[in-house]
Length: 125
Image (cartoon, rainbow, N blue to C red):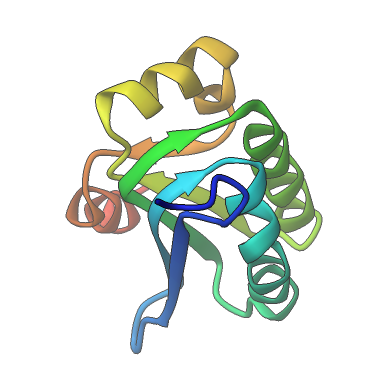
């Protein structure tokens, strides 16, 4: 039986060659234990981000709690101070619904797919 105090979250950070973003793929639950297990790695990505976008791929994210949503807000503002942006892609209907109800999607852009996000970069402002 799985220990409920062990994190059920894996992230994989990918530097996208020739692209203006870093992709961070989430797999599992972004709950208290999951957040604590990946926070330092995400913080490092935020601090060293030279690209204009940090893209969180939530395609395989099953759950997000309020503490993690607060952390998303913190990441967003830290990036904004450096003229960079946080973007969310691939959130499931449930996760997206939570983010919309709380209002996160009013200031953090969300796209269904990576391709949709990339197309938005080529459109004139």
